[in-house]
Length: 100
Image 1 (tube, rainbow, N blue to C red):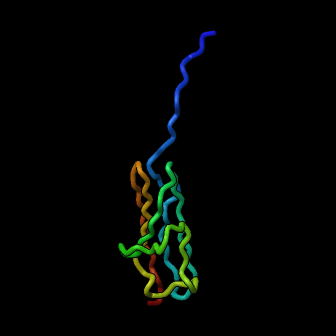
Image 2 (cartoon, helix red, strand yellow):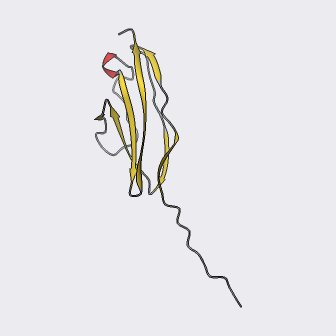
Image 3 (cartoon, rainbow, N blue to C red):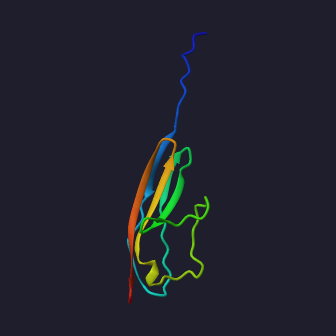
């Protein structure tokens, strides 16, 4: 019996955004939802920023504000940063609040 030598496949990969953040323009006191999708192996750690200030209070991937509606203070740049041992990727967008 003559078998070909086995090969090991490595599927590890640096983070990649598969669905980027989209720009949002919304009236004050309306709801606004931002979402994106990222893949990587090992599973990336995600950190959210608003105007370069971290919004993460723990390592959860789901972040929400308490009242669900936007106000003037929510205006600005939002960024998601995905990191694992193989690399880093980031994606950003702008939230513009109307009626300020």
